[in-house]
Image 1 (spheres, one colour):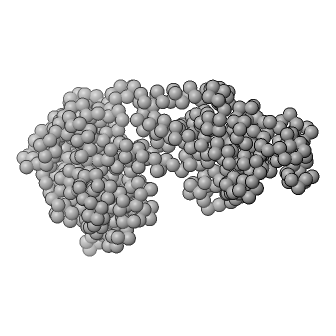
Image 2 (image 1 turned 45 degrees about the horizontal axis):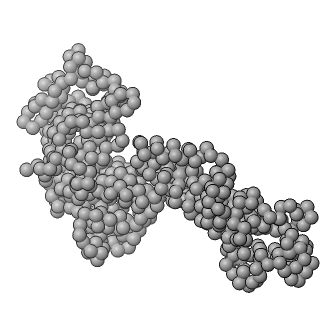
Image 3 (image 1 turned 90 degrees about the horizontal axis):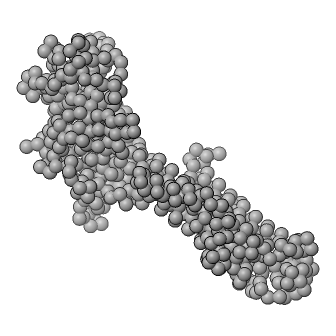
Length: 263
Length: 325
């Protein structure tokens, strides 16, 4: 419940926040490094350039969520396709796809994402895609395991016995039954992707023209000791967002698992 | 005129450790409106024979010899695409576990409709009507309600009826029923069998009934094949085989069935068991596979596999001692 409330709150903030509080987060509006509550012009204070932190948090919510959702969607799509094909066809296809998966798994994800972002100029979409490209292997393994489990169940054989095509068996018979754990893992991936984006921004590898929480932390890190609010406030937002998404994931897991439902 | 002919079917399983013959030289044919029972213990190759006919053998198992002919078409060499058109249309199958053989995420009506959409050109409305008619035909009364139910909302017997409705949706020529009642109550079992008999009388479908229960055979079948370790031990019409079983294994299976004799005093005939278990297929030597469990075994049985020979018209046995039987 708490998770759902947090996620909804942040989504609402991201959508209507900038409308209710139309301040450009890049505009210098007050003296730099004003503490929260010291001025009416900026309720949550200003950063090292005198930009409004509240405006940054509100506008940043949108880009943070976009990166999280895009990366998670990409993770699920790549992971599902590879895992489904490997787990269904087995044999050579499985061998090849799993070796490819392992190749991606042994690369340190943060370094790999950094390389991708550096090569492709840091824009919001490049960051989202890079995160997706480095985080699909666990999803692929999960999807493969589910397909392996389900492909030999009796209703799959029964389906075959009624003469359906292989594509139908993969997408309409096995996939809907394999979805619950994948949905949970996708939800948790959103949280990981948000953290990832923050990490990349902290290292200076994010779009400097798009306000995000990671960018706020990254650019304000040198002033951490003089003005705690510059990094702490976006940090708290990231914490709440990831917590919310993880709680929703756990909740879905319990809801999908009939043994845990009556607790 | 037989609808389905199986000639010298062999199914082999290849693994890294070697290969095993799961089904060895099995032949039979079946006429429309008749029921053939394939009987044997677990692991005797009866389910593999059924899956081979549908060309749905599990990974590693292949048909290595023999011909399966359905209405004049050989199924063994048929491309997969054409085989798909046959499955569920001219030949369909119902499975042992009604609890697990329906897809849990679709309503049962949807699952029956899918078979119709796949094999017929009916439009939406016609499919809907046909689904209702099929559900009614398997003895479920409130068809419109039941068709939107999900498998977990139905009882085991109900689900098996749905499976039968699905299997019969396109009026198949041959219906393979792989132990259709092992997982349901005795009372439901009786209902399912009377349903199958009714439907057979209406559609003249040939039924291949796979079972280990001689009681079921006596009730349902016209002909019987007794399988042991992948081979045919005995075959013939049900009356002859059950009244004059010639193979010691067949006699053993018949004696395993508890008999409840209702007379002036209710008595229970003692049930005799067959000692031992089915041997692992890789350990079978040149002789008769039943030799280790047979009460009549002699030297010859160990050394040479007996051939399937006629003891009387349309009654064949593979046993050296069948004459004494």
